[in-house]
Amino acid sequence: MPSGALVGKSTASLYADHGEFKRIAECYAQLAQNREVRIEGVRLARADGQILIADCSGVQLSDLHNNISVWTLEDVTSRDMARRLYHALVNVADAALLATDAEELCSRACADLVRDTLFHAVWIGRVHATGQLEVVSRAGEGTEGIEQINQCMGDYCSPSLSLVVMRAWKERSLVYSNDELSEQANNPCFDFIRDNNWRAVLSTPLWRGDQIWAIMTFASPLAHVFDEQSIALCKRVASLLGHALDKLDVKHRIECLQEQEAQRARHDVLTGLPNRLALAEYLPQALARAQRYNTSVAIGLIDLDGFKQVNDTYGHEAGDRLLQQLGERLQALLRQTDYIARLGGDEFVVVLEGLAMTEAAAQVEAVMNTLHGAVEQPFPVHEGTTAGVGMSVGLALYPQDGTEVEHLLKRADMAMYRAKQNKKTREKWWFLANHLGDEAPSTPTV
Image (cartoon, rainbow, N blue to C red; front, side):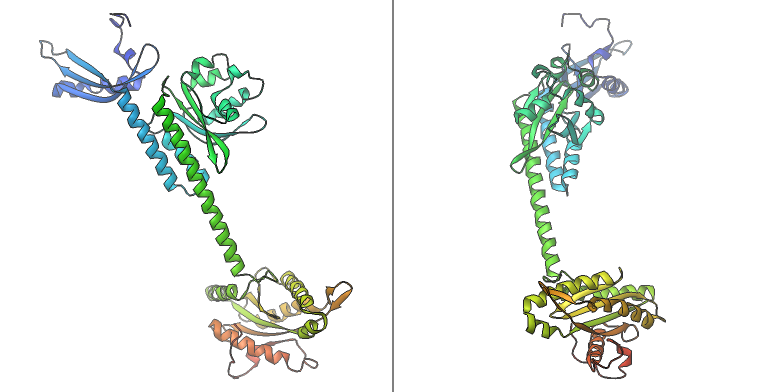
């Protein structure tokens, strides 16, 4: 800049924006009181458009009018950039530690990277086969309208006009421009880039597993900001995010496996119905709900009549097919609020919830009449061969027959054996425990 170029001009032209000018102006009161002042990290505008970071120190001189001050400016751009680079890396590390899923991780990282760092816009996007951009996460100036650049992402743009993000996606490597604003002067997206002051732009692949998942883009209002140090930082940020995404994926796979194992542990392999363990977890909850809503619960133990003969006549494979079909039929006939589990062999448990205290027996009878439809039609067990079975059910009611799960199961077990007696002459295929009288409970089935 020529000597005297600033003479007669407002000092506001020295600063990067009005906010910085106002920040210095507000310190004059402190200068007048203390006769000296120091302001760190002031953003100044150079003649070539670049930003210079300076620590400003002012000293008030003594004269008749007491209105003369001397200011010294110390260029601390390198120091400030190093601090901001370190801050950016720490921010991303925090995001990686705190995030619980990929969306949260990317959103946190983008938001943290524009807070007191070199960048005023950071976004993560994917380019589809059509050449259109899908934004995954974004933060900073211009990112809310970033989809506008889709108009210059297509193949009609010449390589010389191709945006940094598109080149990084096509070349599958880090690409940067230290003066994107000048290089894209003829690009259809120039107005967008200029309005958001994306002077320097860097895009780098974000690897997830063994493939490129997205492109991470950093934009700065400072030209020529990407040097060896800042480029290395961007690489480390992308690498850190990639490792964090991989860890989240591994964690998700483990959780899925654990969920599958828990599902298998609580379901019968043959029929897919809940098993003994699932029933043991379910029954206390069902009784708690009944107590809360002042309703009754019926617990019924089902035992098949004639199933041994099916196994002996047609084989165990045929018996397994019958049990699978029976499980499906029982599920189809029960209400949504009911529960069916297989204990093993030909034994099942049905739980009927939401029964009215005064009408529980009548409601049980209605469900039992419907449930019998499960065995009224024979079961195909081999090609061209069918087999039939019957059912005997014993039911105990909560709270009428007891309030403890174990006691109710014992009563239902006794009622079931009573139902199996005199199968040829019995009027009902099911029996209520409250008709047992004062018989002592036997060993429970569950």
